[in-house]
Image (cartoon, rainbow over all chains, first blue to last red; front, side, top):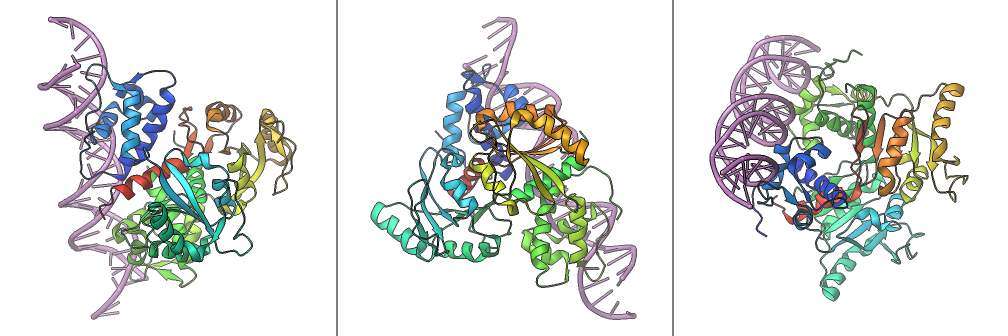
Length: 218
Length: 218
DNA sequence: TAGATTGTTAATCGATTAACAATC
DNA sequence: TAGATTGTTAATCGATTAACAATC
């Protein structure tokens, strides 16, 4: 598979994840789909669907449409979830626990290999997925060890500490080689721009929703 | 406070929630902030900050900047979280449980007043916040009752069921008057366009993050 | 071949930013 | 008044969409 290399917008990547979810659902009914059908589910135009997909290559068949399995495979590769990506969780409060006891929420392509907290009462406890909560102080050692012993490079973390600890915890992770953070806190992280951060804030999303509920113009 | 009524873009509302979070943090240090400082934290331009805010009115003082408390109050009102918004949770699995036992994640302005599930083993159980999990079949009755007895109108729901049940559960909620849904599932809901849906999908966000990690051009 | 749908170009639309008059 | 920063206009940039040649 040849992928074009170019400037890709955040919007396109967001939609890519939506396409993937839709395609997996559509696959239950059919083998093929065209840009018109995809657009309808996405609430957009067929032109956008075709343009989005053509960002990465030519995956369709003129006169027919797209093979769903093929498209799923391609998007899966583009998102890098055709392989297992090793992830650590920083913070084993309610949110961290929810994830570690419900690994399905991560979807395919991700594996939690370490869970860290700074609370002495939590450290040493075994989690639902049979990992042991480790001292966040030892994250450095852990990452180095995973590399040395298993040749597993860990550069992604889910940040699920309390918001007061978010910045300091994130900085610690970055210091130890983490360059991708899923930020589950409300805190707006200020990090080296080389570090990728994706925010995932329930309260912010609820606020958005509430605004639209109150200003519904539909 | 006069608010201009006009077409407001989703981007602006998203940023509004970010401004609010930043302002609350900044308030710990200072009383005032200007568009340049705000822009720096937001990774954007001061022009955008001023334009965003001026969408809703004139809140700044030329030559000085913005009063943080004032701005917090205004944005809080714009987002409708100066009042309590009553919310129900549909689905009391790991995700629903995480929220109901960790109400802080909702932020200010939201109150969970009902929790529903279809699992007979869960119905009747008392949750961490002292609510009783109710049969999702009775959501209709519950909403009517809240209106009649307490004059509380419930139109927002957090959808935290398993993805296989997402569409059918959402349709049920909408039938009973819900018009705003925070969708915590991976399922792409297809509902009447009058219904506002905000998606909050961990796996999708992880996928996005993974893409950028792999294609880091920073 | 005729019909259908892609991939892509060009036109349109909307969002961001630069620049500056207004004004504290 | 001089200095600073807003609010807003106009210019720029980027994203969406319409339209159509390419082609299955």
